[in-house]
Image 1: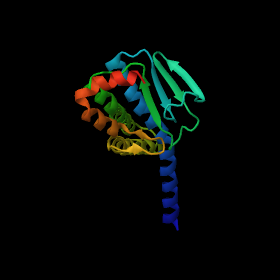
Image 2: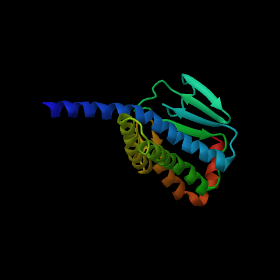
Image 3: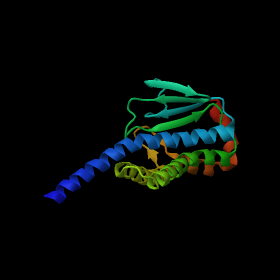
Image 4: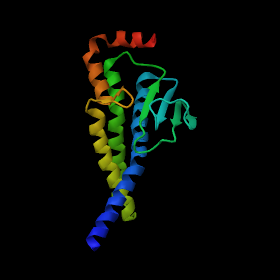
Length: 182
């Protein structure tokens, strides 16, 4: 009886940790893209959408410098995110770096935070949460970089976009010019 109760408590704890972790990981991921945009494109405006794939009518909108945040109330485990810039790079390598920055920044930041938390005297529940954060970050790395289409929104994930950019690398600058005229 006690082992079943412990298993139920652990399962509920994992579910809650993942439910709280997912929005934070989405934020880290989109922030990674935004930082890469800032460094590589010298953008004047970068839109970071949390909980949606580009909804400008988000409930919470604010800006910090050149970063414009749009946070949707659906900011949950199922909510997505998107980062866009007013300037696109015409260099395919920079485009790939910007796409890789989201998943890699998430894993690196989560691992660094976990390292400091695990080497501190904080409560075990906090350490458990950061353990879940790191595990989910690595799962996210996989789901973000394995090429696929997000069917509900008909969008390419980062891996699919990287593959696309690599395939058109010889004509990437022409593609960027054409997209600016859409």
